[in-house]
Amino acid sequence: MKEINITYLLARLPIGMSMLGHGLVRLPKLAAFSEWMVSSFSKSVLPGLLVLPFSYLLPVLEMITGLLLLSGLFTRFAVLLGSAIMLALVFGSCMIEQWENVFIQVLYGAYFSLLYRYLNFNSLSADQLIIKK
Image 1 (cartoon, rainbow, N blue to C red):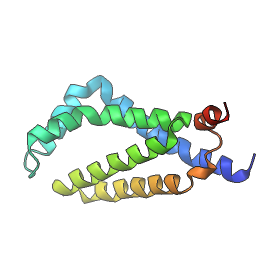
Image 2 (image 1 turned 180 degrees about the horizontal axis):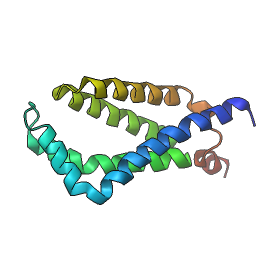
Image 3 (image 1 turned 30 degrees about the vertical axis):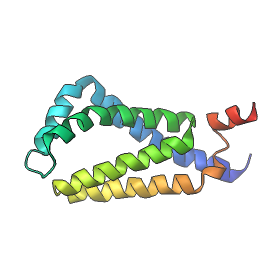
């Protein structure tokens, strides 16, 4: 086992846990989260008809992304999904001028980019168990 493979695992796990945590904490209070998000965007150019379904879908996508990253299953898909989530969040944060959130979301996006770039070091994962069989 190479050190770089362990390094990749140690990079994949925290962002997976973060995504899982974001999703899990919102699911039990999904209606309240959705109301908060729709309210936050009420003065933006985004119509509520777009914000409402996204507010219900976001926690589920975050949870799925987190579970996949933690297990290392379908890692390429999970990294791309995480990047797509960040793009949507950056756009949304720009629409309501939450610039401090944009910065954090861009950092997450860069993190996902690095995970994508170094996917070939993802040997400690469920993906590798599937490939070897």
